[in-house]
Image 1 (cartoon, helix red, strand yellow):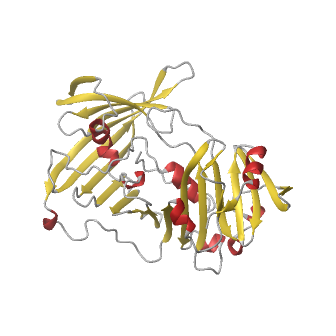
Image 2 (spheres, helix red, strand yellow; image 1 turned 90 degrees about the vertical axis):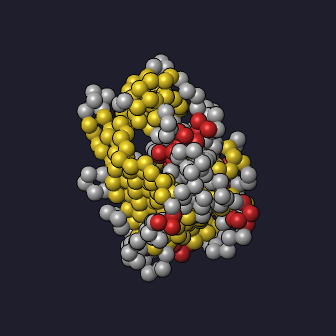
Image 3 (cartoon, helix red, strand yellow; image 1 turned 135 degrees about the vertical axis):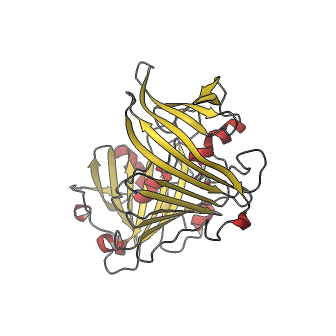
Length: 378
């Protein structure tokens, strides 16, 4: 979900994994919202909305301003979220590329999808995700009513990857959200309301693209910002990767399918100065094994990830910012490796040729077994 939570990134070693697993929003679906909001209008859709968050007691806890531009012909999208204290998130999609810029942090994230129907391309889902899910038959109308003098319908869904139920009233005509209530599920199966979001709309219109400024679907980014580019790959793409040797453990691991492959490159003071001083960029290659997000289907919580960097950019675990761990030396197929215990699992670090691989798993057996199964991917 497009909340404006700017989570501090602890370093490129974990960044690709966070983006692979965290990019899925609570209402995100595989849809490109290819038609206009109202009927089959092919002009650019423009929506301006205010979202007010309320506590279970009805007290305001936050406000966001949302503005969306969407060309249903090209699927070019521009989505801006702003808070009253001017924290801003600007997202633009063109083709397979999604750029998100945080001007307050001077931080630009560029995600390049591997396929045209990749989930991450649904930039407009915060507003149009319910409409798309209804059209695909994934949501059912549970009730009809009136919300703030607007005819409305009520739908419910399980939040993807979260123990939450979202009960939403949608505008009957536009299928835009009017009121969302988020319920946490208790162990005994009951619901506890945790937040309500009230939506009001300042603008809903369609405009011919020729009447818009040419830079509507672009971002003006200063040249000296911290920049991270994540290129998502298929196995075939990864087989042709030439930056350095990379490894995986096959198409599935211990019942977990290959979830995603990402090559990330970071430039700018936020990364290079801390993690790769004297180098032009910081590079990382990630392979993640996890259950896919399928609406209504239980999902395994455990996962396995392999984060790989060139040996020239490897830093000792003890020297990494915010990390204090003493490793346990082990042997894997005759090679030296090191185990690190952490709160939610175990890491194993080893070097193969000129590549340092860190395997994140649920326990010792998990990472040792994965290390024994490593094979070249490119």
